Length: 387
Length: 127
Image (cartoon, rainbow over the protein chains, first blue to last red):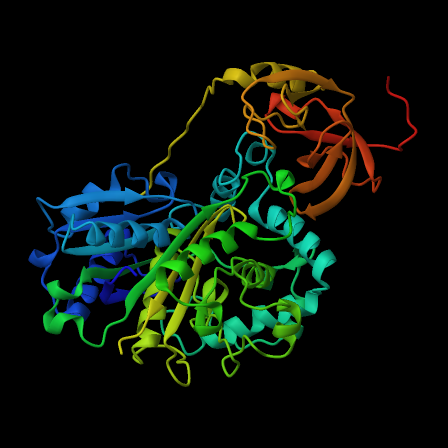
């Protein structure tokens, strides 16, 4: 069990910025709000782990050094972590590892991405295509929606999932996002609206896809002994797991299944010393509506995820509420910040102080799941509430 | 602020150079593991089945069957099984208006990397 405490955290709104602010502003806002939440000062931080996916988005190489400087942090250990869509979550793991190894006492993990405002959508899409095997996939012009569509078609064939299941997820996550003041797409929509939106790549329609967002999120990690009141009341990261899959979808034995997630999940469960049955809340990487079901399936959170979805297991009032934040579909997806925000949401839910839609009764354990590629690089964290 | 960055890459192809040379001619060159005979297309430098590090080039016919396809505003793509290969490959479709389930490897437009499939009737003879 890691024993790393999420001492505090904060995020900016995720959206397409139109207020003239930039990523340096978002970084400062998220960092200083997180510090305040943790009841710490900047001088208490001895390491910064920065997550951002692409220098083409930020137009800034060596961003960890730049952002540390922007935050007034000097003489600290600073590094940048990148793992595609999982960048933010992997940065949390890197920060936790520093605390566990006693290489730092209090680590700021800051994720950011100007995914929406720096470049046109077509340019971002072309760059995202290089998230897969650039030589065989990206340079043909294939986009992530097409690759996810090819994957989910196989999932549908094997499990009986249909477009209506995906539409229900897309609508529900947007409805959850309506309680989230930081959400990019807090939409009052129903499944019929999703089904009526334009097809992007069968079976995915526009409203099945997560948006390109701008924003930042920050969590402060530390051992309890390094925190005010020894971190009383704050959630801990109980277990972490990472596993990769074959990059090229066609080389996987089952292109529709997110098998490596199960490997990461088992590692996280083992480290946390718990079981799937004890997970009472999940923030899942729903880059596409169907990917949410594929992820839940890969993580082993239900024997039959399609049936569980139709029975309402993953709804806010269900046995395992999923993406009460709105997920990527509703809250948004500034890539480097996404995983950090997922971990933050889980921690705040367990502490009973989440700023969006709250779970009725905070469970003991919550799960954050993030991936890069089509579930190619998978990161899982299990958080435990204070007892 | 406005800033424009124009980049023009020249990317060495390394051990895969014979594969890319063949692709530019519209030929399919796979890698076959000398230990277990698993055949990968696109080729892998290390066998995906047994981890073997000795691979030999093997020419395929270039014919493939479309297993799944995704049509978009900006093109159509598919997972296809090339004759003689063990797995599937992601391909861009040259002539997506056709709905045939079979095709043959085509030279990539503008010498771009990646696999491009020309859809045609299965019994068409392009030998």
